[in-house]
Length: 155
Image: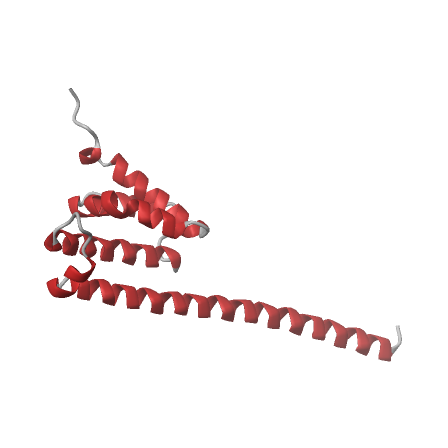
């Protein structure tokens, strides 16, 4: 092999390697930006839930007609917990296979089960088309329905 051919081949290999590394870096940057955006949106939602769950005058504006303001505020506090778990899951802080455990812990709370009873269908509709959100919703729904207090009493 001539020296010039070897130099050209090495240059082409270096260029290809640089392009592959650059593309991987761009994908990683895009993923990190999406995660940052998700965290910002979640922070806004959690801030809104914090205000709604502590300010009766504000909560009154959004309370469903079939519910009292105090009950709605309690359910919003449960939603805060569920939203926090959802964010942790979406950002990869819930290890594979551990979501059912966390879901059962969340659904061991009566207020979380009441929240899920009232708003679980809404969350399922919101999750449609987002595979990860759909999985999260299914796992929480199963935990809510599987909790011993959610079962009808044996005769």
